[in-house]
Image (cartoon, rainbow, N blue to C red):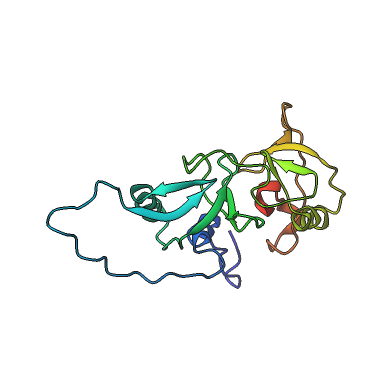
Length: 186
């Protein structure tokens, strides 16, 4: 139990609620246009939210917004269903959400336009992501292909778990007892 002079740390899962807003971009809710009494087209409504190259259905977006009560701005995103990390197409990681969601198509190697030679779950990291991991873990990251799950366990593609965690001194009042895995920094 923490001493009373310390405020309790927030639960990590609360950080998952806000990420879909992506960098404080908020789209105001708009009143939908009135529907005609007799639909003039059989075309389903569009969401304008594209994930891994495929537009999400309005129903999928509705379900996501029940899970994460934020408005998802229209745009093009990538999502790694193995680790749960996501970002805007052509950009590095913006946040992490639940893994295993059926969103869009398969994750492309060049989803974030990475050039580092380091691949995690098939996506090539940007040089900035690679440098961040190297700084955080205080060790070089060699080019290669790795798998990482949402909990941070990982290894080389096709191999068993082999990734080690590294300490994050600013995240806990007791840093010697806290470790972060690769998924925590992606």
